[in-house]
Image 1 (cartoon, helix red, strand yellow):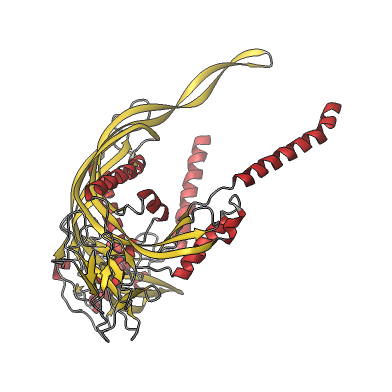
Image 2: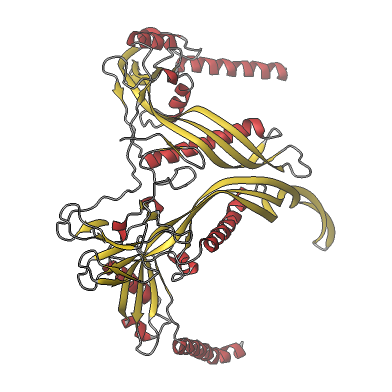
Length: 318
Length: 303
């Protein structure tokens, strides 16, 4: 799909070539008008057979009654855009295995001791997961109740306005990875290294975007809103507690891009169960996943705690 | 106004308020082009007809039958006298609305209250929890885009009537093309732009009351006051598909006027009320009540 770089005149958000109106502020996009110099009656002709064309409600398009050819009119299109920037893999397959080993070795007390030696890697799949990156300036006006300045009630109302500059915020469009996983992965990508073609280990799969453009815009807008809310809750609200945080956002300069982000999805077997681990494609120290719990160790710990409590009670009683 | 048909050269008589004409001789559908004026800019967008005339007729009939209980019985057999698909011009307005507001915000708190009451003939003192509201003043600003406001640009279709068949699904918006209205009746904007702009702003101001009410913190609020400034306003003409229908139910009375949203099929129309039917119903209710009274009065007296 050919897209032209164009900006909204009102909020300076990026527009696609097919946009009739700005997706953020709804300003109609300009088209040079074909002004008539004098009054005249024009008959619209079929480009195929030259007969007069009229709008047909059955076809929902201008249609020639003679040769049945339909005329295309410009409408708001809603394609599924695909990633055009691929962040390259910087972690090789061996490094991913190594990262898993380290991850399993750093067990923690309640993990089985033989986890690192007995865990068998079942599968390893390098993949690019889809995500949007956006930049935006956000004018946020908000109201909330906080405990600052409260009198008899525990809450006092506050209001304010903030200008936020959001840069390189990633929003996941992946169905394969969970929200928690993508959020943890997002922070350690260096997207400035992105290339127009995929570069990585052989057999790496590209998870496709499956959201239409309008759906993507909705998700991005809600991500902008939640980012703005988080920022206000953290930085702007007076007091220590808050409730009823309401935020109205007016975006400007929204620019989004489609990215494919590298990660390894591994499955390992310990005992009879399969566990899933995700290794970052650029930073081998970022590993997420589940580990088995050694129930024997947990039972021992609980028993010991119980014994301690009983001893303590006995001492008190005597 | 007289223009010549491009197809056969015959004279076309085109009313000043119309954008389209059909040649009476060769039936060629023409679209009239005029030099634009500030009150009559060329349309920017149009929504195409989706509902077929048969469907529009059915929808109107269904609505009519549903409402015909109180209507004269002749309404049931009303016949469609005239059915026209019209592209009605409307202004599509959007803006950045910046509202400065002030309100009293109610924050609830609970208090323990002591009260005296009589229990078993003795006066005792008890306590209870009561919820009270503390009113705190709040001023602030609320900024957001108002995207889809539609007001009529036609003196033939008042805004109140247009509101009855709204909403239109603006996702199906198309860039205006003469071919979209060819063969249909299409009107030119007939209301001055300034008046419609005021109307749109009034509509937005009303809408903002709801938005601001939801924006207020606290458990409740009162005395909400606000003044709104509009920035970066945009006002363009969009043609809306509307089926206009005249239904004749009685040769003596004027026909019923029905509107059907040409896109979504929403129907609006006033159905007359038959006062004879209402009077009969009232009489019936009175009779039933009287009968009940007569039946029950001996029983009531006996008690």
